[in-house]
Image (cartoon, rainbow, N blue to C red; front, side, top):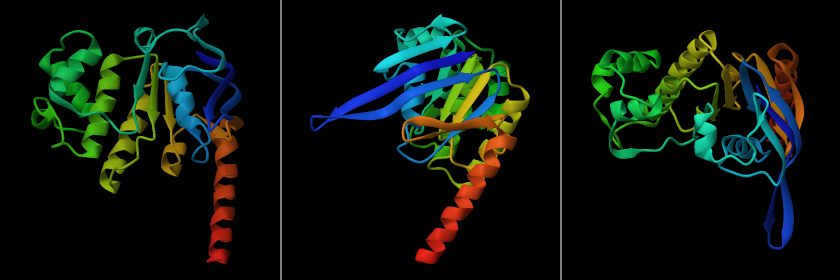
Length: 241
């Protein structure tokens, strides 16, 4: 279980202190959690704090009871935390198979590597020896990144807006991948997203706005309120137009 205790993150701009996160308290169990909320609310910053990319100004982070607040990115990765960036990184000179081997920690058999590719809906024969470069589309890169997370088999996997910058066909395939991951969950999956279709497959939804957790609960408890709020905003915009 991951637990955030009184997490604050503050930056200084033009001699002014700006609070990005304010006293965030959150527990994430072995389930499928979607974190949502308005842009600029602090969602991605919180993900980076969990993974160790950003250090909180104050507060503690516990993973299965261990305080990991001061641990490096590498040390957290060794303890079972994975992070998929909003924009996947391209690795010129490395093949998909190379990355799967690195993620797994040891050399995979070709059959095992191909299985991870098939789980994300890609034909292994067409991709396993391809270089991870500009020849791959955004949707292909995102699914390869998910295959790497699967190959790692970590206890906590975090995805930052996996739908960003991809076409509808790729998005539909991503939804199917996440639905399958949800069925096979072996640990915690956290997705940062605004998409209703991703919210719809969550076990739990956490809403972050203005640097704070403003709501959390099961999908049945939280999603209707979010949809009502969205409809109200759309109606207001229609009147303004």
